[in-house]
Length: 491
Figure (tube, rainbow, N blue to C red):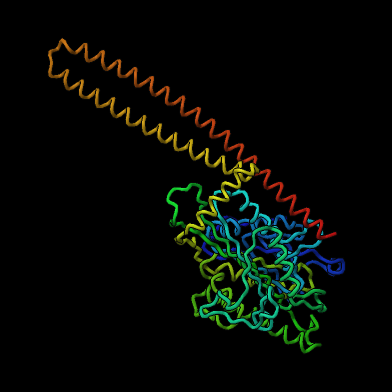
């Protein structure tokens, strides 16, 4: 189950969620050392053991126990980050923990039933559902997929593209392939292609242990679609863009327990994994204390410089084992999560102005005409948007006319009163009659305007309800398509 912590300032700092994986039958017989407690927010309690002298408690922004579903983790972690990215804010989700703690399952799993899909496949599906529904905007999605193996950045989409250089100042990697994706299918194919090139190995602690850090990045940009032909030639447009980074960190390990000391290659991998994770920990410590930040100590911290302490909304998922045998590693993982909660971030909307040339304007108009001509859901939504905008403009025009008419009538009344004051007392009755007549006209006009306003509002409400039903239908079709793809892939 999910336990939610108290409302906090996590918009200005790294948000941390803990997830405990289920126990294996053998681990269950050996005993449980770590549990989630919802009595006071989102607490994780660790019992004493051979490696932990006394009980310890940590409080995070959220905690997911062994029975938590993949959907619950996505709703808590993935959906808010996607909201930020589609609003033009950079977002990052990192999974941290010892080897075999469930990081890759939480983020990347795409095997088994749809219920077992990880955060990344769910996020990709929802991203393109939102894009397909929002016909008023033009979106562009570009993806890159890299791994950091033995302190070397390699391109997972072009395996021969290895030992890439992280640019000065970090964050950008020279020569890293970026692919534009236009659908869920294209994005999932890219994800599968990259995962095939990830380096895994069997150890004593994990049959499929990640031997590298995987970094999937999606660059999502959005601008308003041009829907009319006025001002053709060129025009300025505002574009908002957000970078979504999804980081599956290799698991920390004790080489004696994992058996990495029995192979020179596995030993070297373990040393580099633990070294880069130590560098990440040192960066977190420095950011939380205000000391000098050693970003350049590892390729990992150079690539993630903006995600930890920069222009980004960041969530860290600390994955831990509740088994008594792993209590020492679990304590270290939870300490890392607690330290990350002290790291401040400063997420801002990334907004810029671009010039749309005649070709871009023509493409927008062509797409709009095509959607309307096809008569599908996209065309219907576009037509509803246009009608709502037109009716909204008509309502504003009516309101302006009502204000102007009221001002004119008030001016007439003032002029009449001024004239009456200059004339004989006998004219007072005439002035009173005129004011009563004007008041009656104003009252009648107000009643008419209110009735018109009510009718317009009712029509707008009905059209919005119809649009919402169409959006739900689009979402249901997209979800059905994603599930069908998953079933076909599984078969």
